[in-house]
Image 1 (cartoon, helix red, strand yellow):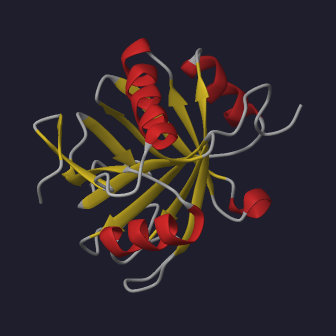
Image 2 (cartoon, rainbow, N blue to C red):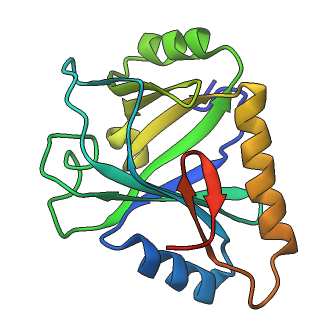
Length: 183
């Protein structure tokens, strides 16, 4: 059984220098979007390589076909899984992700395969772990829980991609957990 087990890959993530510019480029080139953006995201619990230090990051999530695309900007120099791969000002592919129903069992399976968790967090009612799989994938591998409320949010973003028309807002900035099209 491979690293993904029986789970399909659902996300590709990229560290970028400017979220809005990256969204526009991916939309113009591939038709990706719209994207939901959370500036300066905070987790409920966070662990980076055994420490509670949490980098200041912003995220954007959108779809390209059936694949979720994530853009990440790190605003500071706090040690992180992003700085493990890229210095400030550099950008590129960072991780793949897949959704899991039995988070603890899948986490243990990856541990048993010899991969170390580099970052583990709990946010928005869901667990996620990033395993250092750079020797195999060229990046990290994220396992992400799949509770119903998260699947509902992802379905909303996927549907927005399917029905997007020219002139529709390309960026939704989240304010207090709600979608907003104003900057």
